[in-house]
Length: 288
Image (cartoon, rainbow, N blue to C red):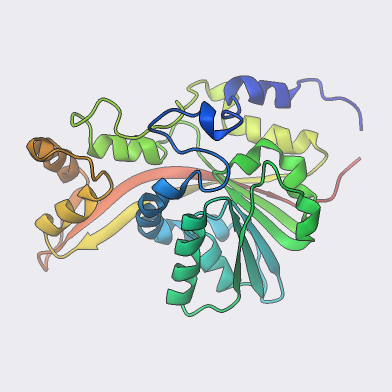
């Protein structure tokens, strides 16, 4: 295969620098890497995953899944994608370097009545992926595994699918940041979103294309939603996303939250924060 005219991998490194190599290089407030690095974020992401469940279906509906498919979910977190995929597939192996994330993943699978999910403690950056075997479908959503798309593809027989925040739309730090704006200078640690459209969704597409694959790209509606019995319950539950919130800052938080709440006829209120994600999927067959 001839060399590409534009080196999209090098552009990706400039637009999306790789995170620090090891845990000690991370900031004090942010999640660490390696085994257990995301443990302190597991409960938070479990709450967010439950609110995104309805929109997660938009992501996995982009590609076909059969009852005979085996699935690998790389960087599974609390099982946001694992659980709905396990309802469609023969089995799902869920990988994460955080024991706490895997605990939530297993618990959510049991709660859904599933017995075809296997969780595995696995550091994608340091361990030998050849020990995992092959899977029909390999999925990676918002994880460090996206740094090496060829490595992901090497494990798939049928499809590789990745999920990334769509360019120009808020990710979890941006959404939660709006809820707690004014209560802290930086309520949620996270990398800044690149604002140059020329290095957005097309960058991901071309990275896959230059590997020799024929990618498909969908931009899907995404977001976080939950209905509460009343406004007070909404405040109490959403406040748990940032337990460090000081009591004197509650009025600011409530005012911010009101912008996301809609009152229903029965007196309940619905929280809705909208965004978009891109889903890229391809067959792991190199085209000449």
